[in-house]
Image (cartoon, rainbow over all chains, first blue to last red):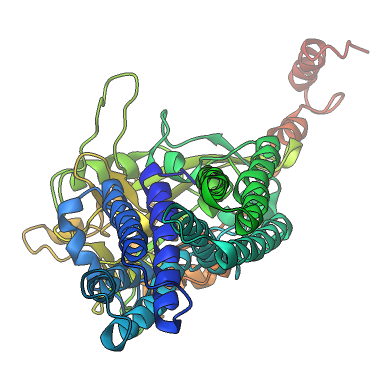
Amino acid sequence: MQPAYSVILFTTASGAGYGLLCLMGLGMATGALPQDRLFGLLGLGLALALITLGLLSSTFHLGRPERAWRALSQWRSSWLSREGVLAIAVYPPAVLLGFGWVILGRTDGLTTIAGAAVAVLAPVTVYATGMIYQSLPTIRQWKQPLTAPVYVALALATGAVLLCLILAVTGIGARPAGMLASGLLVAAGALKIAYWRAIDLAPPLANPGSATGLGRFGKVHQLESPHSQANFVMREMGYAVARRHVRTLRKLVLALLFGVPILLSLLTSVLSGGAAVLAILIAAMCASIGVIVERWLFFAEASHVVINFYGGGPA
Amino acid sequence: MTTLPAPTTKKLGLVIDLDICVGCHACATSCKEWNAQGYSAPLVDQDAYGKDPRGPWLNRVHTYEVGEGDTARTVHFPRSCLHCETPACVTVCPTGASYKRAEDGIVLVNPDTCIGCKLCSWACPYGAREYDYLDGIMKKCTLCIDRIYNENLVVEDRVPACVRACPTGARAFGDLGDPTSLVSTSVREREGFDLMPEIGYLPTNKYLPPRAKRPGPGALAESVRPEPLAGSAVDQLFAWIDRALSGQGSH
């Protein structure tokens, strides 16, 4: 599948934003996070900025962005529509949480309820994003039970790294948060490795013979394509990354998204001051690059069953 | 609404005979010609006569080589929307632009509400939906909905343009929900099949498989070769000439 850069930016940036928002909300609801106003401003501000940046970028890949509001109507059947509805539903409690936490300095009542609401709605929104891909019966690498869980786990893990960054920058210190971030990164890494194992074992959905129904007469190969130039379907679905590059890119993801940030998050929980800020800043930068590569690979590794008609496959 | 209607009793669709399709692309070009001026927005090509022409087509004809050696055959394979009964291209649509008609099962895109998110093209295993880069919306086969019910056309023209254009009769249009229709009968008699039934979309369009292969030209040439030392003197003369020309010498 052709990796759309606007969708990669959307899912990674708003993913981390939703992860951070979820943890901030959870922290407020449970009282596990400090109720510092500057910390609240920076944490909620960064989360909402990332979410909004991502949502805006996601409209860039639309042919008719001015009609995007229509996408809120079909939540009964469409995960894309559900994602849109949930993404909007997160804003009111998030704004309420920010208002109570930062402006009023309240840590009770409605602020706590708003915190609990975003803690639930944020990961559910990311889950809906993952389900857009997981629900497609045409792409075996996405039609995996781990597709949506990996989206949620990565959102929480990258959000936790950002949480540590803000705790370190505001001078509060990220001692327990560093442990939390490394724990979430380990969990997300384990899920991602299991996902890779699953897609490597998943058999192709079809081959040129089964797709055309002509396989019973012998081996099928395309003699002539319907047209001289690549069409939309070939450009959109025919994108494939070379096998050996997949191995290299997966190693890069393991190192940048999981290895380095796990170690540096642990380190942050024992360091303090400038050293802690520097360590978690490097962790955040590595994780950002790592999650973008991971998301790019998620698209590039996906093979669509339609390419069996176009001289490709088995897929 | 992108939720699917209850199973329709009327299932309009096409039956494509892979045995007699000659791969002339008349269906594809007549489809392009008709749909460039009818329902939905025009099907405009960019750089149509240049080095990198691009643009949506609702019907595409592949040519496959099937089998190897003596049993190999060429099969021309037209591919368009199959107007499935339970297609995810409809249910994934976030806007309701993609829909399946309850009255005849035709799957359409409303050009006024499509946002061009392309998700329906990802959901289609048959490559039936193509994005129009100029219009910014998705295009697909309409089963020529603006012909089949069009009372301004003479009756024989009230079929999809591809069916009307096919010079060999390889494409038939009809109600596959009616077991007595001509299309349903031909599907029964010729063991018509669904493309990728395992995906679970229940395609309406059916394909008729190529018939069993007749003996190849090699065997045929052998059987009509004149018998030596048989028949009249003239026959024997031609038999000798045949052998001489075939490089088998004379004796």
